[in-house]
Image 1 (cartoon, rainbow, N blue to C red):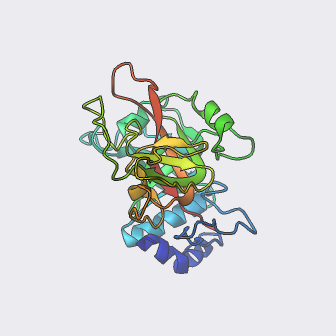
Image 2 (cartoon, rainbow, N blue to C red):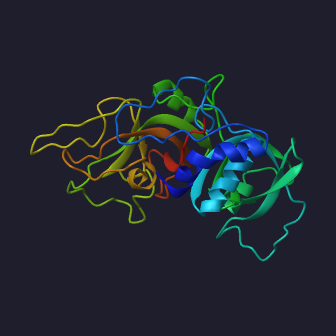
Image 3 (cartoon, rainbow, N blue to C red):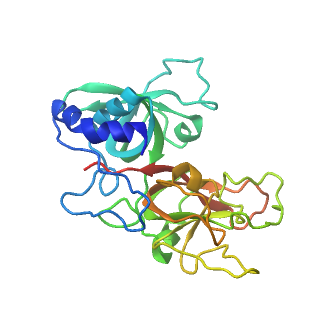
Length: 293
């Protein structure tokens, strides 16, 4: 559990009540393979987007610990007519992009963005709907609009039908999936990737490889065989995703695989840098969404 999550567990209720809400962070998934209960009202940020009030309260809480978080919110960001910081290079770091306004308080919240996100949007046109943000301290960085392929939810099912529809999305698109993340093939003598630019930070290197599955996959092996992909359906993601984003990641103990970890993960559609690659696009995990009850 990160510092901001521990702080929120005891303090977000007070912050939200002061800003007109009454929510508290739910405990993050721990080592157990059994997902936590989902009784009562839907958890914000994993089963429904945050409201603007909840977003601002979470931003304040994360800012007080200097930690990081990834969130989704039902919001509208209005770009600045001109950059307030022309010296900032959006190709290198997140730069001032625009503002969102809390209609309950009329407070304006500054939003940053990188060039890779800003260039996907219509210049000067507000972007609204379910938006993803990275919180770095009190800074709010727009990651993009979260695409939905199922009615009534922004979560894309981890199955053939849901991911086939998501697979038609262009590079740069974001989706959220509720599944089990693990790394397969850890410690296996893998062949050298054919592309010298291949990296485990992208989902195109498959040994070792990251996978998101609808149910926990526990591989077994013999001395001459190790599972490099799940027995059933799985979304191939980058090998480093497990260590970077899985809740309570654990080292490999047997079977060349890490223990699967359940969460809602935010994925970005990315292009393979290799020429004439097949598939040309894949899914990269860019964040984990923790629940706010």
